[in-house]
Length: 204
Image (cartoon, rainbow, N blue to C red; front, side, top):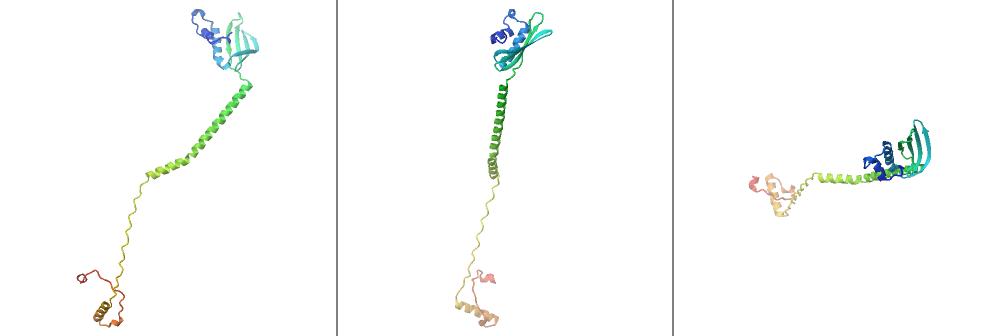
């Protein structure tokens, strides 16, 4: 009866619209247990097995098959009048196929995470060359500008010795030197004659 309720019926038991329709606390607790487990268990299919224990109360453990797996429903009845004391829906026990499916999905998820991290690391390493280029660009941009080298002065032109090829002038000069020295001009050899820039007053 409980697993066959729709949402409206369960809501009416949990939150009755009238005080006259209020149910016993045991019924409310049982419906609340089913509502909490319904999303995980899925739709009810069939009963697989039952185990009944009698002590102070009657405890019935029912192995049930639901849409998402198997679960044990524990129902407790009063030994005196067989009234409902409680009903609890345990967590669904997954089948071997479901467990294998979850294991495969977890493995695939782990492999995907590893490959994504490897791809990210390889991409990061490949960007190091661009980082070094950017650093070199910043260094060149911030480097002080070296002053331009001073122009090298051109060497002063060497004045070529002006050779005066004047036989008479040479003879006169040689004679004057010989007279001053009291010698003959035979021992004199005139190799070159240069023009002096100083006047005779400066020489004095």
